[in-house]
Length: 331
Ligand SMILES: [Zn+2]
Image 1: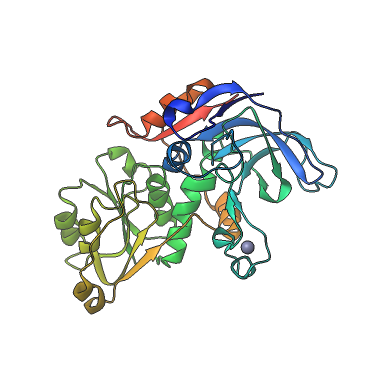
Image 2: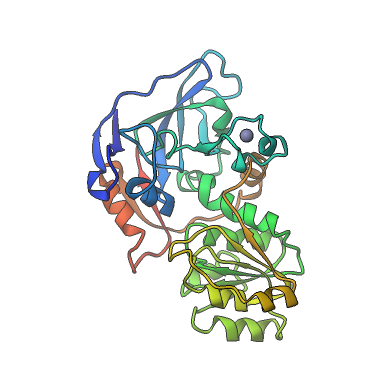
């Protein structure tokens, strides 16, 4: 089959190439990939992370059509449209037992610790494969595993309530556009920090520029500031996002694109009873809920590349013109 693969770290080493066809074991599902998402973690996979196997096929997020199933596969059939839960988990450690597969002690990630979906075909154990309801387009199908799941899990962990004000930094990004839509479904007042006005169509009550964020949020909330602030950007805008958290508020983070060294004013932290929370994707329960909950969710796609254009697709992540998601259309 054709695939994007690399044998050592570096964008220059990612090649559109022939790769051995995946084997289909008795518990496996062979998926013909239709669409794959491009995420910052894919960039890290190709340039920095330790991967398995080598040569390695990246791609943590994808959707496709089932081509073949192993003899023990029960719930998935040939011809099904499917997406995947991408956390590798054993189902038996203490974290799995409390429903936190995303923190499995013996876990990993499809696309990093196993081959991913930037290929014509991928073979995966049935337990990771979920039917994609018919009303989802392929772009949406390829946005559940990381983008939508992380946003949903973050809002759940922060226990967002209908009376809350939620501020989303990087609101036009992969996770941000879902954080905005899902926070609205939680009933919250949503303030998107972004330059993109299309976020109003995604449910934002306010779209506020980065430089005016603190003043505007103070004005909108009559000085109470936010109950939940989501900032997946890392160092950049950390101080602003901390400043925006009101009393008993929460600051949720799940990314460090702009760096991970930040300062915290401990005095403000304790005097305002602020909680800082880290999030890493989400659990199977979240994933199943999301497939139901997100039926009217939208995905803003900036560019779709062919499978042969993996390097260009990854470079696009840091383009100043980027306006929405980057996808790889596989077939
Ligand atoms: Zn486990």
